[in-house]
Image 1: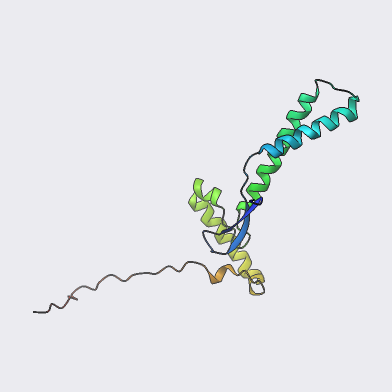
Image 2 (image 1 turned 180 degrees about the horizontal axis):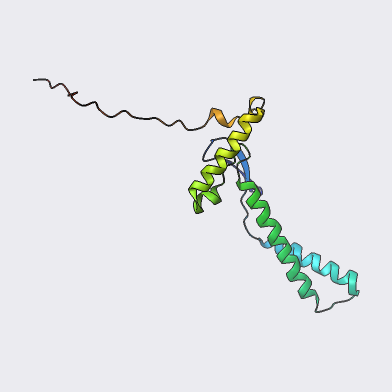
Amino acid sequence: MRGPSQKVFCAFCRLSRRVYGQKHLSWPNVLLSLLAAALLMFVIWHEFDPRVMVIFVVCLAIAEIFVQIRWRLSVVCPHCGFDPVIYVRDPSAACEKVKYVLKNRKESGEYLLSSNNPFENLPKIKKTSAPQKGASLSRHI
């Protein structure tokens, strides 16, 4: 059986972390909302009342909000601040957010004592030098 969270790797710093895979309500959430509505109905009116449907819809809305907030907060990398949801919409905004988080971590020095140091795994930018003018490839005759 699969748990509520999955182990994934950050696309930017390549460190492992846990992310909740559930973005929306599932059947167990709907059944728990129905149970909560039924309990509230019997506590308030002591018998069956059709107004329980309103309570059920409110419970569903609250559950959906909590599930989405939990998913959204778990998507952001706690090590480097990379947010894939922002990256899909605006890559430059995601880049600025990562730069800001890494700058703050470097200034505070907290990364030195951490076992999850994002600076160890950052991608290296390799600049290739263009061939110089006048340099020719030697041909073997």
